[in-house]
Image (tube, rainbow, N blue to C red; front, side, top):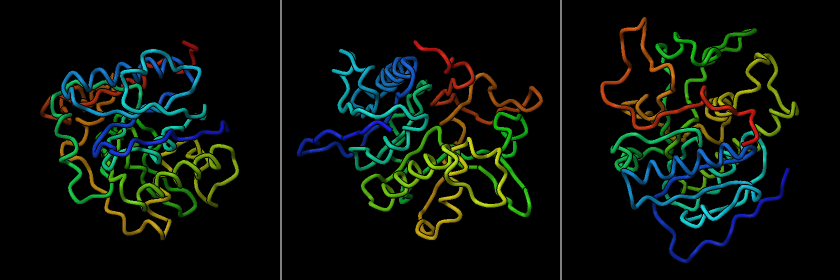
Length: 256
């Protein structure tokens, strides 16, 4: 792992802001810059913290409120989430784009929750967008229903920051084959969503965390190109999506 240090914070830190992580490929860095601009189209006052590798940093970072160096692991996102400089944070995957003015209202949706996620419903599972949402193996049952593509959370609360750090640390071990709970399907080991599920459901320390779901759910993580139609007819949202997620279009194996 690359050694990482969060830069010194100014005396007065923003109360609310967005965290974006761009590691491994320059394409993620370029997409992160586009995401930031797309949010600012609807929310010009938005504050951002970008975590990226030093080799990607250039003059385009000058217009971002906070820029931190991170390593090159496949899931540096949780490191960035754990080190947000804001009191309330909205994390968004770098391969996304904002397309609706409701982004300006996102922090009002936290309420008294510790974290707010998009939930993977049965309709989404039926489209096989995420093949392994539900699992049942040797009596070990569960549902990876919390999607980590976006996450609104109370980052000023120590237990929440500890959760994000544990999510990162445990996935590092999981991904390296150094941790896996007995009896659970090994096919799930690639997903950081399993690590998320484990911490929420199996770790006593986090049993009292209050986790909410976005009221209009899929608008906050609209997974292109599927569009969430059921049998070509039923849409899972009534309004235009707020966040479009281009994961399936993104050439993650390219060095650009």
